[in-house]
Length: 556
Ligand code: GLY
Image 1 (tube, rainbow, N blue to C red):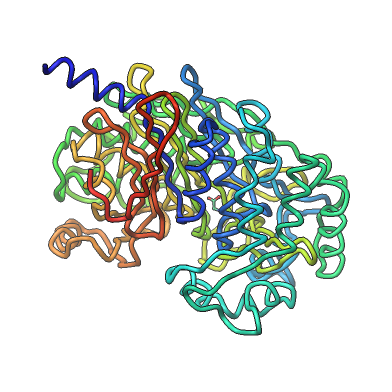
Image 2 (cartoon, rainbow, N blue to C red; image 1 turned 90 degrees about the horizontal axis):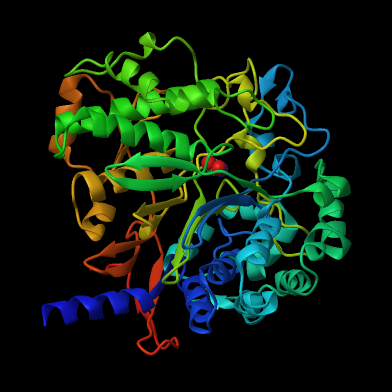
């Protein structure tokens, strides 16, 4: 009897597919594609395009990102990060010797060459099963007929009203009638629908040449941007080897450079595992914070686009390097920053979005972004989409940025170069079986957040829901502060202060949208810190049947 039960559970697990993203409509788009027989990549492409419509603060076709794909046998890493356009110079945001953060964050000059469309199309070309127009249909429909804003989204629009008013085309689309839209209001995006239809019909030339490219160039001309037709036509996503991390008998896959995410994850998971602490408490937090400092030291000092910068990858991945540094950490107090001999650089913008899909065999973990909330604030006139402000993720030499930090050479601006990222879409495998698919927004906090969920799950043995809701902290080596989510326990914070850490409270960290194997089934969990939803698509017959939407407060 017991054996039959186990077998049944395995069958259910086999046929249940799941999707989770930051938005109800986007999750539904992915679930429908799964229900129609699409695989995880089809569904991920559907979610990616749908988020560009229904989650305009971070979902995009004007930005870039990273995708991890598990095809049932092997992990693949697709890098579709933006590149610096022709004419981009190392000091392009400096005026009279002073770095101008406005220039790197708002308007046309802040935009890197968008990679999202090329990336999603490339993933679909290589792994997709359904035709592109079917996969893009939900996004086109949502843009054409409109969608209703959630309370969470409406609050974001309100918060960013000033940026949305900055450019007339952006106001026309996102402030209909000149007013910030209310929760429940319908937002229709006809221009975006047209752009998406062009992409569905023509593939990459629907975006990187022809009408859409012409509109991007007009916008560049009008607002003083650098992106050229050649930049658009030459843009290519890259398949790269992911970081493969051995952790407690698991294989963890995450992006390698130009994202720092995988390397940071490697250091943090390795250091905390080596610390020997297996229960949350002051010593565990101390080990975690010091691990983060070491990882972010490396990020600041050495990391950048590997096609342009020389990066000591062997060293960064070496166990000996990690152990040598761990030995320097005092047992009960922080390793003072003066013991590190350089200045790292900066914080990054924190508005990004992550979604995860699993279809019973293949899995997709995707994080993409336009960097800041609503990116550069600049909509391409007539094409209906926002451009990113990813150029701000580069660093400028010798000039302290808005946070008083300096840059590192590996990440200086150069034409065609990809700016360093922290995005950390992650896959976890155990003996070839998918255990978890997860990631988060949050700029430099992303790898800290992903590492903590992995540690919660596999080191501290929490169940997936507990692992996601547990309070989080962040340290990025410089500034020398431990950032605590508002949900962090005050007594645990006092214990850290006693050890000598300087603390800074902030809004809760991260928004992890993941799918987890738990007791034989896969559970999509949307982080209650965000606005996401998960859905399960079930089948007992071999044909997909119902879609079950999970509320964000779902407990396995
Ligand atoms: N723009 C945030 C990141 O790429 O890490």
